[in-house]
Image (tube, rainbow, N blue to C red; front, side):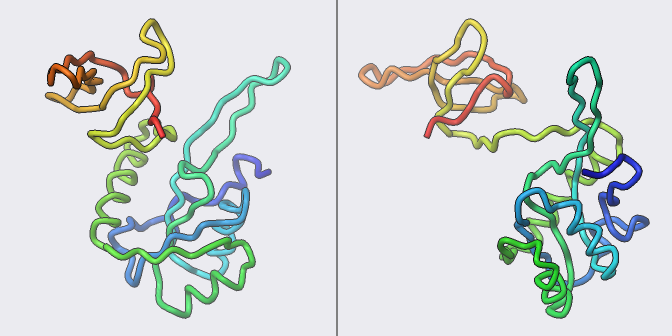
Length: 182
């Protein structure tokens, strides 16, 4: 485990933004809990990467423990040519390399995360949800209710359907109160 001062930078090189990087983007799926160690290896090899992280604060036996954790556990994003890809594989910290098929969409997705991190706002990991996905409420007075998630005028709603009638109703919910139904 790293002390706060030993954490790798979120972006390497630090003065850059991810839109400055040249080459092909890859997703490195790391071996368990190797994200930061791989980032340090990439710094030493001068490989451009993006490792979004957020602070996690927890209490343990009257102590407050604050640690910087990867936003996407097990993943680090890097950009480079074939030689850089081979250098990454030599670290022995990779479980799998995922080729990014739609480079522009991937960059657009990462730029949004980078922009939020640069503002200092707090990002926390969250379950991936998509509109139209069947979800279940996991807390509060509506615990256990299932429906389909939609977004209307910027508000998240859970649609409850009565198929026999061909009718539905919806209730506004907080996004962190739901989980996908498998």
